[in-house]
Amino acid sequence: MANPLTFYVPIKQDPITQAKAQLAYDNFVASVQKGLDDSHIVHYARLALIPNPGGEGILAICLITTFDGPMNPYLKYFWNDGALQAVFTGLAEIALNPPVLPVTDLTGFENFINNNNLNNPNDLYSAYNQTVRQIENKFPPSA
Amino acid sequence: MPNNPMPPPPDPRLVQGIILRGYTHPCSCHMLFTLQAGPGAAGFIRALMPYVQSAQDWGDSKPDRMLNIGLTYSGILTFDPSLKGQFPNEFETGPWSSGSQQSLMDAGAGRPDLWWNGYDSQAIHCIVHSYGMTADALSGLVAIVLQAAQANGAKEILPLKSGSGRLEEYAPLRDYIHFGYHDGIDNPALRWPDDPANTDPGDANNFLIGYDGSQFHPGPRSGKAGEFAKDGCYNAFRVLYQDVEAFDKFLADKAPLVVKAIGGSLDDATEWLAAKLVGRWRNGSPLVLSPDAPNPATSNATDFGYSGDPAALKCPYSAHTRVSNPRDEMTFPGTDTPVPRLLRRGMPYGAPPAPPDYEGERGLIGLFLCGSLAGQFEQLYSWINVNNFSDVFPDLDTQDALLANRVSPSDGDPSFTIPLPPGSSPIPIPSLPQFVVTRGTAYCLMPSIPTLRRIAGMAE
Image (cartoon, rainbow over all chains, first blue to last red; front, side, top):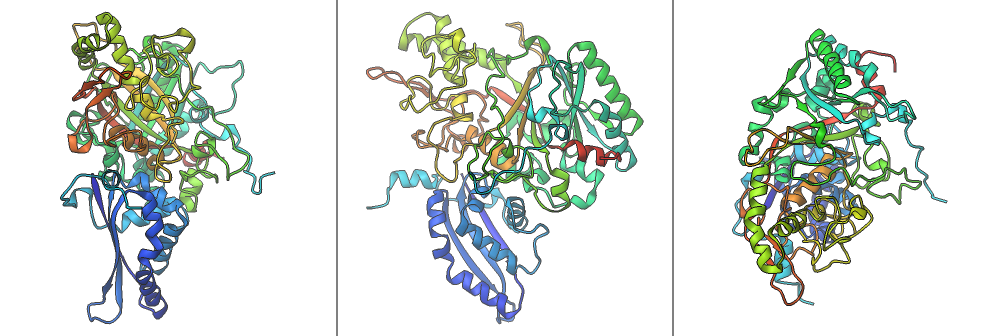
């Protein structure tokens, strides 16, 4: 059964932070490609930049993923992967409201993710029930 | 020489005993309390401190009675509200939360709003685990705990509808569960690693909070909560009703199918099927070591693996022990490796049935100790409910044959297949019944002795 993560973090408005957010957006797919490929549990992932109401600058970043299985046990995988850890610690650094716990260990990371997730497990519509691994087994990537 | 040697292990006098050593006291009682914030809560813990057992070796002076203490997140906040938001999310939101229920999948009669005999799960602040060498020693200690509660405004929660309402070990059944299997065999010996870069999931730094080298990252490690939790350990305290009638009926119904497939008597087929569900014969012999019959010589065996049984001709893939401890089974790298371990301290409650009369409350009191509730306990439970951690499972969605919650086929395939040697068709069982029902789950921190003394207002 797939689950949704909609990770929404308002960010600071200074030029350096805004540039970091744009850089995170520009490099998102390249920076997560290997880690998410290796996980075999993530169907889709994308990063969106939410514009300020006036249209100037970035209000927030929004990371949207759909993944297989429960979230709690698998957060350690994302923390243990150096590239994915760097993405999330980078997002914590530009957050308008810094996490209560510093994102320097798994506990801080877990709480950062959960406290900024706008979705619950029951919020997701899915046209199919197969997991990434079941789909990959059925349709192996071409050599 | 390792580059970054581990710090020395903690002084065992600072760690609650149940974490580092299995108790062999035959009598135990597990009492749940709501604490009164302020002096009452501190006074309750202070009154119990003389009986709290540490992990120090007791040599020849085995205590006649002793206890250990766990605190839930809401219990911790009664002592220090400033710790709010500093513990791992699953500990704070509790086992009834939607996040934890994605792994635990408690449904039907076991769903969280029915837990604890109707008491609010969040009212549980403290669990006192009392042990005695005799029934009299235990009842004396229980009386002391009750007196401490009364004197300090702690209210007892009675989680069972039957008997005293308390979770009392059924001593005559010690080392067995109500389904008839030998229990208490397989607990890892805790080692302290020399090198944080080379630790085993069974090493103590995966269970005690505050140390490097664990890929499960026991925490919190920083701030006031890090100080509070240091040298503590989490306890997923889970009470599971065991439906012996459903179990016996299943074996009786399916035994003829087994006789038809492999021959023999109905009695032999019943025992063979019971072994295939669990991966061990009821005497404890692992199927991979003793595939044809139980063997007293292997009844306590722990040194074996499954890689020599790739077609599951000895032990079915979804047999309980093959799921809950896959040993050398290849699991998916990264997400499902390393295989998490738990320190399991379980005991039966309730009297066995006298068939054909199955009335009565009975089951397992489970203390599942870990450094990370999400990364160890919930991950293993998610595997129990959906066998998706290794590509030995052809469809990646079957379930543990004994313990899984059968919610719906889309949440786990309840079928069970018993492979047979080439030339014989496997034995298919389209749908396994629900054998266990969750009566309650509480996530507790078992703090260090210094933390207990601090919250009790005593000098550390």
